[in-house]
Image (cartoon, rainbow, N blue to C red; front, side, top):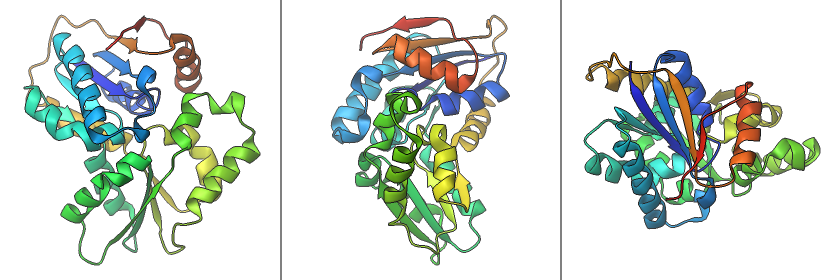
Amino acid sequence: MYKIGVFDSGVGGLTVLKEIEKYLPKSHIIYFGDSANAPYGDKSKNEIKNLCLKIGKFLYNNSVDAIVIACNTATAASLEAMQETFPIPIIGVIEPGVKSALATTTNGKVAVIATPATVKFNAYRDVFDNFAPENFDLVQRGCKLLCPMVEEGWENKYSIYFTDEIIRLYLEAIPEDVDTLVLGCTHYPMIRNTIERQFTKNIVDPAKETTLELLNKLKTIDKKNDITPKIEFAISGDIENFKTIAERFLEREIQNLYNIKL
């Protein structure tokens, strides 16, 4: 069918991969998890862009039909550069997330929780301003600890009370009239149950909307008849840690894991 490249700074992009699997079960997917360089949220925009271009080159050289940047920080730092560099569809997660939030909110009050870098790059603000009516408001909150916690396997290392308290501290700065919260990091859906204990209104996970955007882009590409459906995992860091978290989230044993250095 298709050969799709998906990448993230680590395990977070698995939330997008899971949606892509639902809609494109007969495709060959190459997932790149750059855990050796995680978290991206503490890096400069130029550092992140250069890492993404290296990953993009790896995926492009493996003949993928499209690349999904399954990371908000990477999308903010590199989407434009990736689209200028590689002559295939490049899909990010920020615009689909914004569009979904605008379709979900009933009072025009939206908040985004994301990595400090995503907030600093103002990526959600820029896209939100392009699509939102004037009477809509956006609040952004940088959450430095959440992505590293997920990468470390939060369920085995942190108590439920600790994670609840960390998330409560991040969310308490969000105005009470906000009715829609965007999970502006693909790691966050992995702790959605914990987030829902602190925020009980609308929660938007951009993974599904990103997948629908990918499907739309693939309409312009001819399907391949020689594709063997499978998923390969190229990991730049600790394979065993990635495998443990991935199997727990995907609820199955995963194979075809390779260690790849950028």
